[in-house]
Amino acid sequence: MMIFRQELTTLIALGLLTTFTVVGTAAQAPATKAPAAKASAKATQRFEVTSIKAVRPTLVRTVAALEKGDGPGAKAAFDAYDSGWNGIEVYINVRSADMYAALEKNYQTRIAEGLKAPKPDTAKLLPDAKAMLAKYDEAIAMVETAAPLNRLYDDVAHLRIVRAHLREVNPALKAGDIAKARKSFGAFNDTWDDIEALIKERSADAYVAIESGMIKIERGLMPKEPNVDEVVTLVTEVTTQYNAILAMVANDAKAAQAK
Image: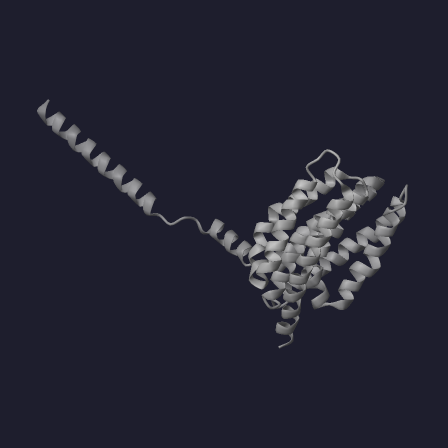
């Protein structure tokens, strides 16, 4: 019995040693490389590329709505495209005037005009929407394979992307859509933190004026029935201050690109 216990003790000890060795080896084993490779690939995408790609789904939704004969749905999706496009169009315009003209002055103009009708001719608009989506994909491919623009264009685009929400407020107020005005201003307010340093760096006075104006706009939109004219004026004042800074950064970006 004594021998058996000694053998048993030895076996248990060996088993524990083996277990610790396996666990230790597993703990020291390197992580699989696949997730790291995916993360690396995602990290290499420039802000320009990801921003332009982020607008594409609005065109996809426009096409889908037109295919269903859903005029109001197509208009809502295309309005969202217009807002998103305003943020990133600078990249396309700088890279290719022809591509910019095809997207904005050709397809966008015709589709937007057609969707203004009380009952849009969805069947007539569908070919243009599909062609526009294909052209947009060409623009994405062009940007992906091109060398980066100077970094100031990312600042320009970032400022425009945030401003796009602010641009929606006054049209919504004038159309009597207070809910949309509040939602759009809320989106601007939520993304303001992303770019306020860019504003402050250029002009402390403009920064203070914009922040002060935003507080007034927020208060002005609180009542159930806001004073539309008053809020429109406040939004216009903030937009003017914002646009002045945007123009400074855009001019610097052009100058840097020309060097």
